[in-house]
Length: 99
Image (cartoon, rainbow, N blue to C red; front, top):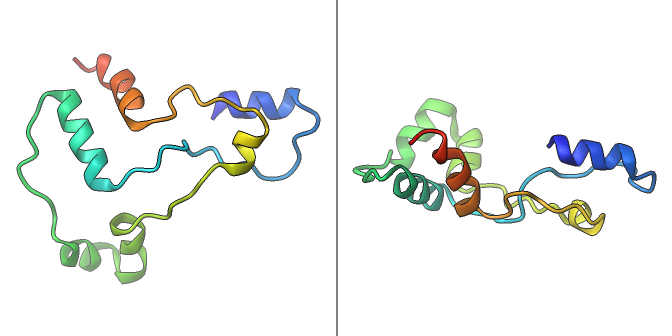
């Protein structure tokens, strides 16, 4: 996010809103599996969707259960390059400080 903000300050042609999400869209299941693999830990169970709906409500649960499929179209068109454009590289970097 900091790199995107710096680019928007330095690049006078950037106006309006830019999305800072990585272009590599993943499901929660994929995120969990990659994260577990990077931590060298198994995934034993998942929370049933009915439990998530009960805890956060039906409307908000769709964000967690179905995702939002947000794409950084304008951000990529501006020439911005994400340091971690996929979940594997992002979690590799995150977990190297944990292991």
